[in-house]
Image (tube, rainbow, N blue to C red; front, side, top):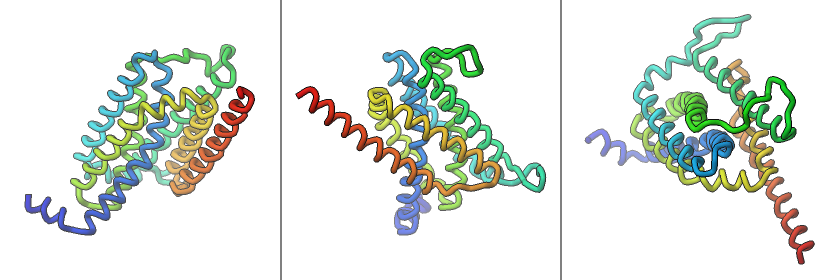
Length: 246
């Protein structure tokens, strides 16, 4: 209790908390876009439930990982070297997650561009099962969680601050999940833009895993600019439709 009271009276702890909450919320955008696109493949009556369960399990997963933060930190230690490049467990997890995102985004783009695909490596059922959706949400959240926890450790050494930041970020994801998914479903061009984001995020994860770190600010600036342009296009389309309707 004395430790918590001391923490609450420390201005540096509050600054770290606000910074960490903001970082967790921003990092959660990647995960939320993936969840929205994935759950929109489910029957309408199951979508909201899948989002709630997937994000709630993601919270449990992140809190469980925080309890093993001492082990998580060691994941940055190289376990083998290839051509002078050391690879840690974190690198391998990022590469695997990036490859999964690239594969998933490419497959979805393929189905969106060609609604009647021929028999090829991307030809599979567009719709997925409830359990498969939850499993894929957890798989990707594991990748993002490990990366965000390692980043959080570099910002603060206080576990309570990390826990509060994670709970705040996941709560924001729960509140934003349904509105974002409905918005994406109602705007087909936004679906393609979101898939492009996932493709870019996947490539960034792979690059990070191979030691070529891309500052997150560049990624989110590109995403924000693209979203702004798409927003202007949507306003222009609606005005044209309104003019024709009038």
